[in-house]
Length: 527
Ligand code: AMP
Ligand code: MG
Image (tube, rainbow, N blue to C red; front, side, top):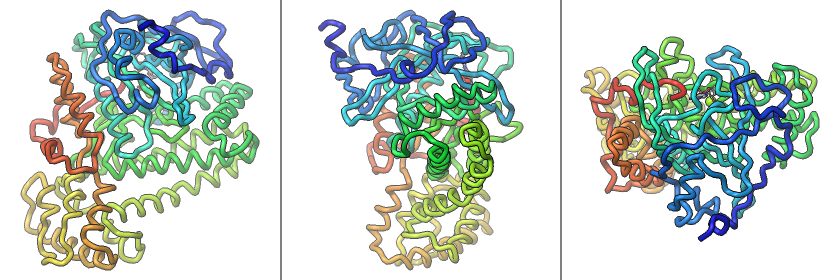
């Protein structure tokens, strides 16, 4: 088979590079790039690229056959050593607020977009290599990614998709054969680690920071071009760009962002580094770095050691941070609408929109058909207090709650007992009993069969999530040369709401060894 026939059916449209202003300078050295949305740049070849995992759903969607995925050419392309015909690689220019401070130009420092293709359903997909070598946006870093962070990004992108959460996707995970130096805890003890490249896939990688950089530089014409491009490409249902359409667009970005956060809160996902450069304008979960999953329910938990002190991005803060980020985004599009008041009014609706969605989601988690403000607000507040009072595994708790028999003695505390990490005090035991008996009363008001209720609850309460310790076990094994657990975890996460009794052990509580282990609870940015 020749190179051409393998990907014959895949054509690249490359709207971003065709329609937006390119950096006329293609020198691949770190620098400020003004007056341009992107810079054309080639991936830097790696030593010995091998595909160690891939997403078969994503491959199929893009039209890559299994044969192609297993070819050496595919490994070379996804490792950055070769291009498929029609690809037009580039790094995007963007800025952002990091930890609340304006950081200026950031840009694709280690991500290189290869080209944009489309699936038979008409959906456009940008293919992007993460860890493909330096770009003009790399600042002082090397443009590379290590295996551990690449496994985490690959697995979580696909796990989130299967959980039904808006996200960027992952096509492939390539081991490069190169060693990369990293100081994992920034403590002056760098080590060499295996390098890897993930091929990420998304309809668009445009971020809040993509707009912010232009307004910060007073590049208003560029800002207008990027906004018009985004609306025409990804929000065409809103109509042709105009002041009214920009306002509707902002409202939709607010809604999509709120919907995404509600999903995160539903499954116990903590992004870890919600800087405005990591906020997709499509409301997709993007940039899987120091993210984590809460095992025991804890509003105040963050996996990100870089944020351990200020605790800006802890689980319970995510809705507020999203709103703060949306405010920065709103600021960046003021020149398009010329009035702050209407943007502010839309932004002000975020809290109500979020609350309604959150309550609806929580009602579903509890198996209620609707949220009844009179009874359910207090029931929820008391539940959160209870879950936080003693370490309680969130995923296990909600899954077991679905199994509570409403007809039986409401004195049992099984859902709590199975989810508690330690023996509860008598006081807690009593509180749990009381809560459950109120819960049983309330659940009994919705007339539906026990079977129906359980099905409904199990459809929103996953049995399997990508627990931090599971990803870490896959990483440890992969470092020893056995990559099989990556694909096995992907297999489990394909059906997170199904019982899958053969995978029961992947639904277990966090083991004690993982409590304070690097990689499981302590992660840093940008590895
Ligand atoms: P992140 O914290 O991953 O969102 O990254 C923030 C910024 O740092 C982005 O502009 C990244 O492209 C850049 N960056 C992170 N890691 C690297 C790296 N190893 N080489 C070059 N740039 C990087
Ligand atoms: Mg980023």
